[in-house]
Amino acid sequence: MGATEETRLAEVLKQSVIKGDVKATEQTVNKLLEMGTGARKIFELLSAGVLHVGEQLSNKEAFLPELVVTIDAFKKGLALIEPKLKSEPKKGKPLRIVIGTVEGDIHNIGKNLVKTMLEVSGHDVFDLGVDIPPDLFAAKAQEHDADIVGMSALVSPGLMSLRKTVERVRQVRGDRTHFIIGGYATSPALAEELKIMYAKDAIDAVNKIHDFINKGGA
Ligand code: B12
Image (cartoon, rainbow, N blue to C red; front, side, top):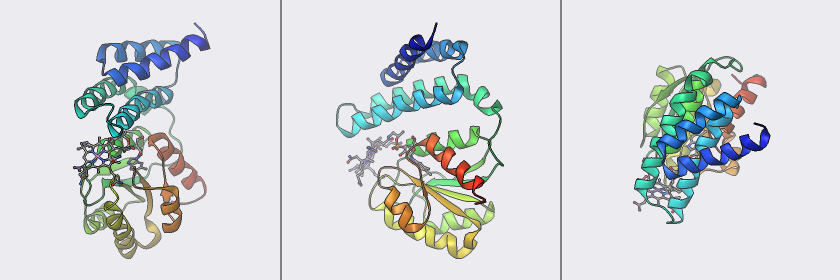
């Protein structure tokens, strides 16, 4: 089995997650592991399936029940690679990260993916859940002595609360706490304006945080 077989299985895995086929997902993850495919690569493929159905839902090509079965397949696949992800050598020092979805926003699928990836990368993650007001973010950042606050924002009205959260946390924590944002309503331009980090997906979040530490950020 060579690179072509691995490429084929990669596509099979993504499609299995999209279909929500738990058995095929588990079998393909196991085959890829046997072939020596890295756990991170497998995480990316599993996530790609979830993102695809998210987009389909957005275009009304799929409906919520389809996303639910997709997430189930994703979780079953993830369970098989989690031990490997956790045992990989950790990049840099572990950080304390408070994460949540901003006030006025109840989307949590993307946030949960990011949380999982940060946890398996060795960070201590405190998940506040969804619809989190700025004051609660600030209080929890203080309580956990957070190095980073991560905010998910998918609906545009949530951006007001995101901006306020940056302000409140800065009032309480000064420059001891940094920020990373993601989700449909956010953008690299917004992050640049607020002088914070932006990540397009879970792997990007881990990499951005890693680069940030390497630059002496935390
Ligand atoms: C699924 C979904 C729902 C589900 C949510 C289920 C749940 N438990 O989360 C339900 C049906 C409940 C829902 C409800 C609503 N939704 Co909705 N929903 C979506 C949809 C189709 C997919 C989102 C998703 O889960 N994608 C899959 C995940 C894996 O991807 P992701 O979220 O992008 O996350 C990745 C990255 O963005 C990033 N990321 C995400 N968060 C974070 C956080 C950090 C810290 C970092 C670093 C990175 C990061 O990493 C993630 C992993 O790779 C989006 C469309 C879209 N394109 O986003 C609309 C969408 C977000 N929804 C929308 C709307 C309008 C609503 C409703 C207001 C609808 C209504 N009229 O009732 C309500 C929201 C109510 C509220 N106040 O929050 C709009 C928002 C438009 C806007 N600009 O405001 C969208 C864009 C659809 C559209 N095209 O119009 N929704």
